[in-house]
Image (cartoon, rainbow, N blue to C red; front, side, top):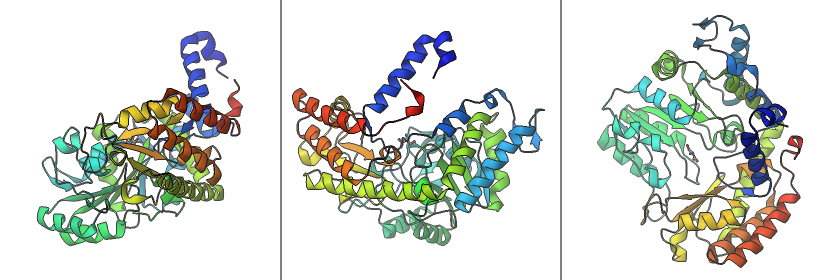
Length: 418
Ligand code: DSN
């Protein structure tokens, strides 16, 4: 591997090798990450990176797009089949521009919309005041219930009836439970709002039928392609035919220039993989693994937000261990043990976003690696030991040894050599 890179740029080649070693010797629990197949990896490294193809298939602003059109149409058609979508735009560079394109297509600056509050599991682009979505539009957030830590749809409805939003966004980056898209749709219809859904985290589960889909209901649905869908870094927008022109115009020329054709090729490959029967098994195993990991953690005295999970992720509440604001310290201690997670705010966070009181973790990447229920028990024990002893180097070292042992049994990217 890296034959040419090694000669041209040994420093970058070394960084790639080090990264490979890091992921092989650790347990990747960041719920937004995954390991793509060799075919997806190969597609990303093709000569399509050289091409400019502003516009859409058969309507381009540059010549020489005969084969790019093949690639983009395959990506679109496979995505439509995967989700049953009426219209798909596969050009968004990533999740944030995909969401921005939807706002541009459906709203005017200053319009009111509703999104899940960031500290309760929403995304920056769902109305955070530091993001374009909160600066250019008036976000009236909905939150989770303080007691149950669940989204209360009656409360969402009450807020919607009062706020009269032009759009309601159903979506999550850190909500461990099932979203009731049908209930969101009913509220949208009652108040005359567009329904936008961001399924970036759960798209693979939705495609495999292990989480309800918003596609039959929502006006527009966005998703990144690199999380549970296990594709390249990027995003796409699905929408009802009536919004197709507005969405396409908002993506290009609204906010983007030339699409990244090598990434479109890799999206097409990933969607092909996602359409295979094995992908359904993979998605089911993600959820099974998450349930077992959650149960094991709770049996070891770790408090989870909403006391469990229905999807691929869970959120540890450190306040119950008297570790309020220690998310960063615990994340670092887990990293020393070879367990990769991210610190996260918990609902109604008593500390700060940079030093929050939560740890977010999930099972998409470790499930790709082949881990099953019995491995979840080893991981849960490691996590609980580190949390209980996050300043004790010798206990952390012992966990690292167990994690290394576990990792050896599950080779990662053997095709890439040393
Ligand atoms: N940053 C992503 C995540 O980790 O959930 C969302 O954009």
